[in-house]
Length: 152
Image 1 (cartoon, rainbow, N blue to C red):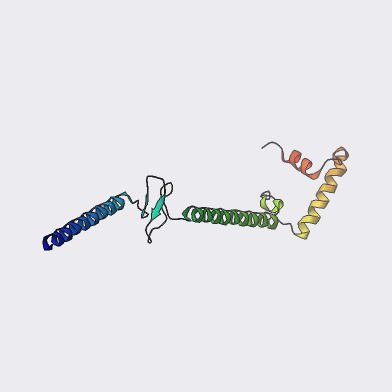
Image 2: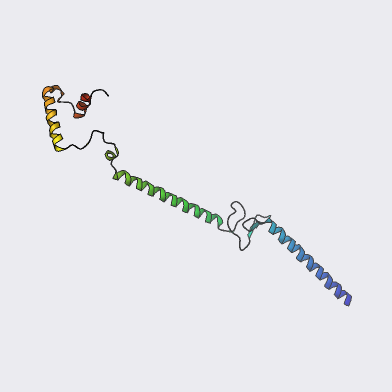
């Protein structure tokens, strides 16, 4: 009876060793199949991840919630970019309102401020010119100045 107990014990030890060996070799096979996120897929398509698994493997097996997290980040970036664009547009509109179009145009070179004495002289000269040329009275000052300046 002693030999049968020993044989049963040895057989049990061998079976246990074979089970541990096959289990550990099975685990190493799973470890080799893990992706960079720490997850692996079974033949049935189920996804299993380690406790320390992280997101970062789009399109592969990932921990739950990674796709939702990526979508939230994308929505946040879109919202921030939209706010930046609206802010830039508002500041552009403020700039356009504060600088009228007349101020942005260049004044003609001859448009220097005249002294009161120069203004009186100009008025006298225009009066004398119109007295000699009454047909020119209906023309604007700009047209008249352009004609008097001549070509060039």
